[in-house]
Length: 106
Image 1 (cartoon, rainbow, N blue to C red):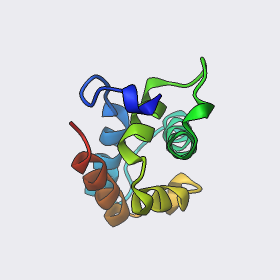
Image 2: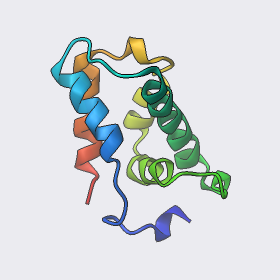
Image 3: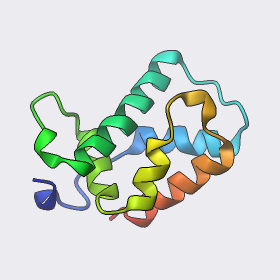
Image 4: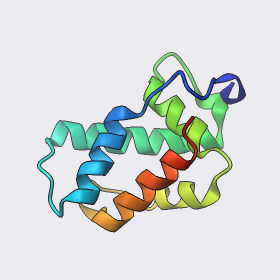
């Protein structure tokens, strides 16, 4: 199913905005709800990248796009897998992840 996703029809704008904010500031002001959403997208995107059969009617376009961008990119998947809470993401790590995602963007 992920193979059928066109490169340019989806956007990870919110995820990219959060990563940009985190890479520019040491402690950006981000609501708890947005932090939870960010972590949810990261975690589910990795699950879907590893097993696209998990896509169902509750899967968001952000999760599918993230899975599409990281599928087969073990180093990115490993970096995302290590993120278990919002507070442990350093600005340098956010920048590396953001750059990695942009490399694979259309």
